[in-house]
Image (cartoon, each protein chain N blue to C red):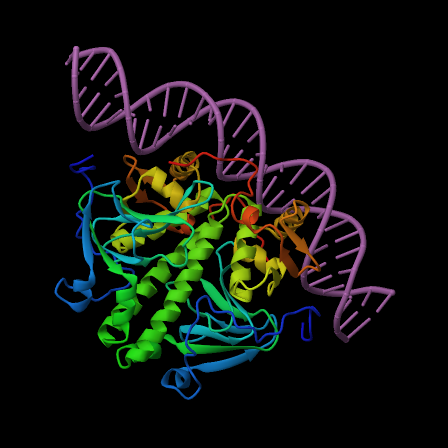
Length: 238
Length: 238
DNA sequence: CGAGCCGTTGAGTTCATTCAAACAGGGTGG
DNA sequence: CCACCCTGTTTGAATGAACTCAACGGCTCG
């Protein structure tokens, strides 16, 4: 659990914002002084709902998963956080939720909710920065809802690959090193691990992607991956 | 299609924020002057992606649905907007999206994205208000992702009922008048209409809810509805 | 080497979907 | 008043897809 798990793990310094974003929260800014920075290796808990306060989280380097444990014991990952991504849980008092590192050497800034809210009214720059981070979180959640709304497992996995590729590689290339395990993908897409695995091999066999090791993905046919992965269902709903 | 659609529709003035929120955007405030207010009846389009600008939307009275049309023609509803709810699409350039009224006499304020962003740095009060609206949108999207993450259709429908009940009735009662049709529920939960209908009748037959007309729902057994609707799966995931 | 985790593949079952039909309610017009 | 249409909702039957259970290979680490 400690050392390198996969020799092909990506270097954790890669920049991964959705749009370009200012470099908020320098350690000596007002926002930065509010934060508690936590360093963790893969699989270790960064924060959980048993902590006394509610927090918002921002990944500094590495990657993290924000999840909720459902009443039936399953784990739903609500967000995958790459550097500069921001996330806060809202209205989940009854549930257990938490943030784990998914790569080694991950650093996360934790902002106490109340104090962060109190700062909003004081400083327009802070409010603006927080707004933009919140919009970034909203954008990722919209993407997740859209992916979860897909019908077939192949479509979900395909949309996941395209989305995560956009965030990790910023659209510069067709190759991707996944920061997530199959289990994390499954918990993110609400699929079983087996189905994720089967979908990936099927996408490979259809020539839409190619795999070089479990985490090295190359997009071969972007259009087919984006548009119609279901065999055939052309008619609209409603 | 014109007059009152359901005589039992709740008065549209009911307050429906997730947490208590200030009354932003009075028509004569800076934020209010930015807005274009649109009035629509049930089923009419409020705004769409063919419009020249990107907008953020806030429901003043009535109810609305924010949706995206997927490449396969299906419609995914990303948010149901009740009074004072705020929503903006992010990063869906390739897709068709829109906002429709789902009750008669619905009014929606449309804020042009660029101008709204420009205001953020100027006025801390505006930035704070926009922040809180964005957090509200984030909270609803998290709830949606959590609901979509459920396995069975019964669980999805049950979670939907509890969530929408919380938002419409604010937890004061066990009775609810749904603002949505079965079709809207289906597009929100990514289910077929038939499955939504079947799930509701099954929940009724199990004694978890009771139905008086298609839109009158009463929660009978809140705990069972919340916790385990699947027949039997006690073991934890992971 | 054995233990443990991750990933893949196979076989059988469950469950949501599609296709199809029927019913209820509102509205209109003969 | 009744026939008719249209929308929304419900129910039935059959198909198909993802799930569970199970097993195996690869890899790391102790």
